[in-house]
Image (cartoon, rainbow, N blue to C red; front, side):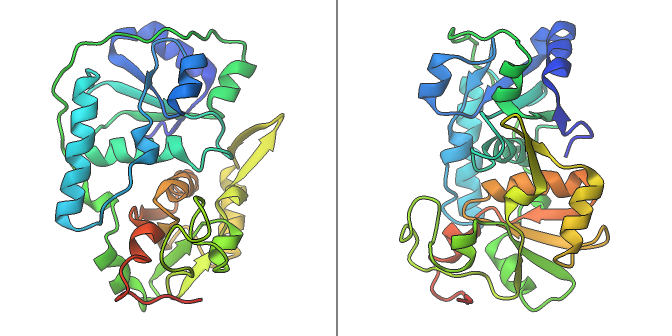
Length: 281
């Protein structure tokens, strides 16, 4: 990802002042929350969170690429801009801003940052908000997929018995234990359980919360927590959750700590629906 993975509210105001025409802010919250108030000039793209990958086959990935190419083009985003994404709060939005950043980078955007602390941090800093919706002329998004960022189901299956690749499950506890199949309901997916030989590290653990604002822990803290499940700075990690969102949040944390990781974007939503794939319960 970008060398500037995270950007503070104060840094964002400086960026906007320095290059307002070359900067695009993307709000990943619900349209209802966006309509109440948002960062000035922010565009609402909820699909970065809600879109479910049909499957990680070439056809499924092409559909994902086409879907977001149409959305981004319609909003006048070409992909060469400085893009800053945000959600309300890191520990409540299931990693949605990180999922947006991951998808933007996967689609070919080179300059992508995440507002550290989210909208709550912006509000706490006393910075301005609006309910006005910016108008932008459509453009042509320059799609350039980065296939190496996305773990496919085929790759995950091949990695199950490979001790050199750590399969990291970052879902909530009830999903890991097989009590629920998703955050959308216990029986949203047809099967409960986990990918064989996976280790578990609940995504919340890599963040801390101060004054109700969640932020990523320090590099040293992240490394210490990861080491508790056998992950070091030399590990290769495939991360999964339900739909690649909490996995994207964890991917950012690991990258901050210098750990090489990839996102199995289809995650449990895809894996559980293919009954030919093995699971542990």
